[in-house]
Length: 321
Image: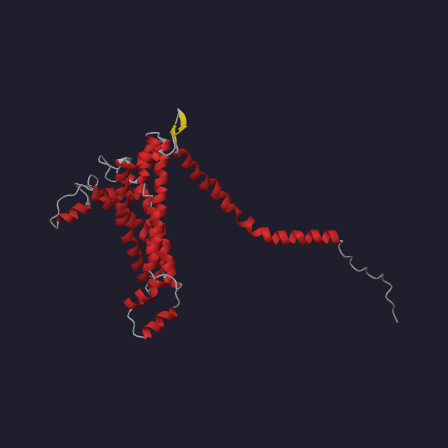
């Protein structure tokens, strides 16, 4: 009978109590603080490039700030001056006018387009990707094309209107005309983008709801208003808020439509609040006053985003019970 002459393996020694407690503490700390560490880059970047500039802009708005002469604290004088500034209120009216003309039709068209793309079509992927083509087009190229389309003497829009007996419209010199021209430019670029967001929300709606509604005799229109729109409430709120922020910050399109003229035309007929802010800060070098305009724009965005959130929330399904 063979006998195993190999030495017995020693049992593993337990870690000292002090080392076990240290490892346990490190494990607890890892479990507790690791999530905060993973999400910290976003908040660090937001603090450095978002919150700090916002606070610093408010501090600048409380000063008479010049590029060479330094600055001196004047409190809320820039804001009181802003309340009686006719040019500022003209820019506010222009911004709200273009915002209303551009945003409301844009979201309605995007919802209708998404509903059409949600059905079974030939070349479905091609159509869905095609609506993004305006978004990848350069803003400068879009502005050049639309400036030609809305030309007073040789523009295609006036040429078409001529067949209906409409006299030539000077789109750039006319307030309402410039609003319509800039708004159509914005709608052309962003309708497809919003439609894809709506389409993603529609595809997340269970198909069983539509099948049950069809069995009960509901038409497609009834299914759209009774199922699709209420179920899309979070998506509609999101797109409305994003469109509100973008619409009130309108800058590039009206600027290029007026050939880079920061005043938005000879009569300031298409100058937005963002353009007026830029004019004061970087053309007139009144950084304090320009910062006050920037903060008023920020408050306008907060107010209109809140109002739109409440209205759309109630319209698209009512308050939660």
